Amino acid sequence: MEDNTKEIISERETEISVIVPVIERHSNLEELYLSYAAEIRKITTDFEFIFVVDGPMNRAYSEIKRFKNKYSNIELIKFTKSLGESNALSVGFEIAKGKYIFTLSSYFQVEPHEIEKLYSALKDDEVDIVITRRIREKDTFFNKLQNALFHKALKFFTGTNFKDISCGLRGMQREVFEKFDVYGDLHRFIPIIAEHHGVKVRELVVKQRVEDTKTRIYSLRTYFNRIIDILTLFFLLRFTYRPMRFFGLIGSILVVIGFLFISKLIYFRLFTMNYGLRDKPSLFLSSLLIVIGIQIFAVGLIGEIIIYTRSKKAKYFNIKEFIE
Image 1 (cartoon, rainbow, N blue to C red):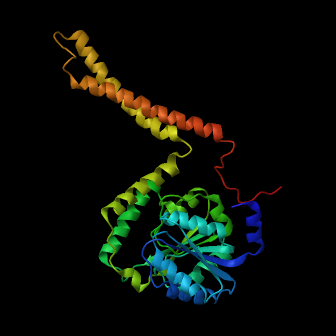
Image 2 (spheres, rainbow, N blue to C red):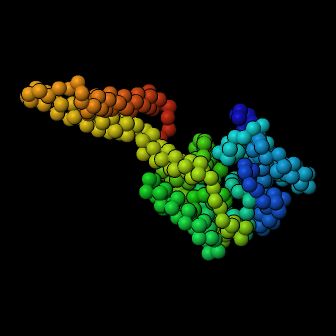
């Protein structure tokens, strides 16, 4: 987005922007809007809703387009093809005019009145991002189990203590989203990435909506993708600026193992009678380990060179305050 466009947006800043990505399943979207809008009006009348609809969601687009004419504070965007939730949020962030920005799932997860709690935390407390943790009193056992396993794995790889990172209701100060690029399926990990960069994140306990307690069973591909996402996040947090520590360690281990094997074979060949190497698969394996180890080590070295050459332009820190 060009600078002059950003200036226009900043001139007509509103109090609250609510971004609703419509990607897959959704509730009655007009009911969703009316429920949350009614609660936001108790806080301020200066707010906007931004619906970002994925390419295949034609029925949802038609529904929003129909009731958009009734209300003056709704913005509607539709992708030409399926681009996913991260892109939907990115576009929403770009055009949002609110001082405080909230994200909301396209289906009921949390009781609408809880949004006031998030607004108060953002406005009164020194918090940059507020996320929500649903009280799962009436949730099914399977939902509780998969949520617990997901967050235990997340804590093991990232050290985070968040208990409901997948809940769509979040709030943040406007300037926060400008610090991060969201892609793939990393949108659900924004609080973890933000906290890693020194942004203050708070998790609030909220009441779960009844509609959200239905058993959710996803495809095996979805569960596999979640595992990949966690591993991706682990690498981004630990080794983005230190790739040599990851690739160098793995490469060195493989080279050492291969060298020990091949040294043993050479020793037996030199000092043991009738010991041939031609029919020893271990010779091929040890040589392969050394070659692969060197290649992996080289990947880490190239990564370090790339980071070094762009280090002057890259921003690895966030400054909260500067006093002269």
